[in-house]
Each structure stands twice: as structure tokens, then as C-alpha cells.
Image 1: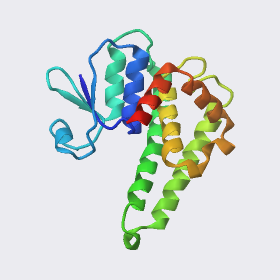
Image 2: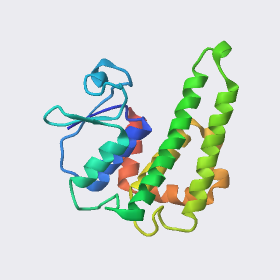
Image 3: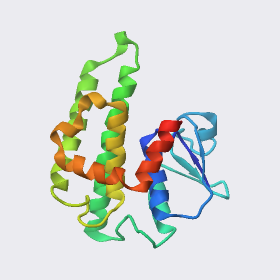
Image 4: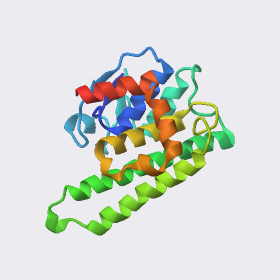
Length: 205
């Protein structure tokens, strides 16, 4: 398999951490392909990453689709509950974390525009969205060990990737200052080899 996308892309990170946690014995080449590049559009007409290219050249895109597929490849270390409200809850956590990342991307895109075309109102609204998502995640986590209770799951991976992205790209938001529950989870996640090794590789890029 080949995974298209940048190592520092938080959605690519989510896929790579799922692969590490599942301990899947697959050949994986990570190609640093920016969104919209020709190599990405060859497999994904939307031009977005991550994009997982399989042995027969079939491709999966959107991190939520990719991680769902990867979780079915082995019954070991299942990350997504099979059905019912537990499954919906885990996917809900993922949607919340991904939505936070979407808001971050909008902020970055807006800030990259020429100053005369930039909208501070858009930036402010998206920052409010980030803070709102953090507050809800912090409250829902409460004193639980992991997002879904005692079991590590995709929910934790998604939230962890969102927090890592805030650390790397938005340190000025200082999410740690008022989200003690998330900080406790984050420290636990950073101690896992899947997170630690991924962040180390990204730093070396």
C-alpha cells in the first residue's frame, strides 16, 4: 500500500497511528504529496490527502473512510466498536476532532490570503469553533481514562491528533491552560509508541 500525504498533516497522522496500533503487517510507503498535486489527483479526483493506494491501484480517500477500512483488516486491537451507540459515540468523537481540524485549516487558509482580502471575522469565528470543540471534548472526557471509558479507541487517536496539531500550529491558543482532562489524556497518548514515533518522524521531516 502507499499512503499519499504529508507527515505533518493531522489526518495523515491519524491514519498512520491507526496502522501502528493495529500492528498491520503491510508495506507502506508514505509519499509527501501536497493537496492538489498531480500524484494525488491521479487517485483522488478531489485532490485531497490522505489517500491510500492499494496493491491493485484502487484508492481510498478521506481519513474516516481509510481508518474504518484498516480497522477491518485485523480483529486484533479493534479501534471502532462494531455497532450500536458505542460505535456512534466513537465516530462522534472523531467527527468533533476532525471538525476542530477543519476550523484550524480555515484559519490557516484565511491568514495566508493577502492582508487586503483577509477577513478577521472569519478567523475569529473559527477560533471560537476550536475553543467550543475543546470545551465539549474536555467535558465529555471528564475523569475517564479514555474517550470511550476504559478502552483505547479511534476516538482517542482522533482527539490526540487534533491536540498535536494545535501544539504544532497554534501554540498561542494554549489549550492546556483550561482543559485539564484533555491534558491528562494527551500526556497518556504521547507515551504510546504509536504517537511518540509518529511525532518523532514528523519532526525529522
